[in-house]
Length: 203
Image (tube, rainbow, N blue to C red; front, top):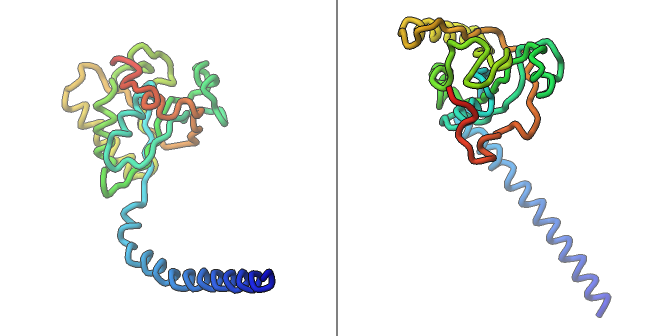
């Protein structure tokens, strides 16, 4: 009985192994065909990066996360001279960093121009190194461009805003090249969302 059971087990294992190999062989062409047929869709899912500073990065991130086409966001520190900057470093207002949000977006669903509109709408670009009660160079208004196209779009958008006379004071937003972006500590990521809040300052 034991010998028959052993032979049955061996046969069952061999059948299972054979079936697994057949499944792999059968699925491989399907998988390849799927990739091929979805080539256009994959191209549309290629993301681009935009980086904005507009005061308290908690609220700035929350605003961009609501936009269709924005695939991910991260808050962090950029534009300064200290490597691997931390929140404590930046709070000294001596590192030159700005609190910023890095946005990964699908350009087929939302354009950089539309992201600029969100940026201008959700902060006061006329206050030097200040947003609401937050003071310091880390709270400055800035656009860190990642390409010549982003630079041109940002400059044109800023000029258009200035000509609109929406603000009585000059727009002081910096438009500068993107440099090293140091991701902020985990507890800062999606801070407002985690706590069910909608804003971290008043304009």
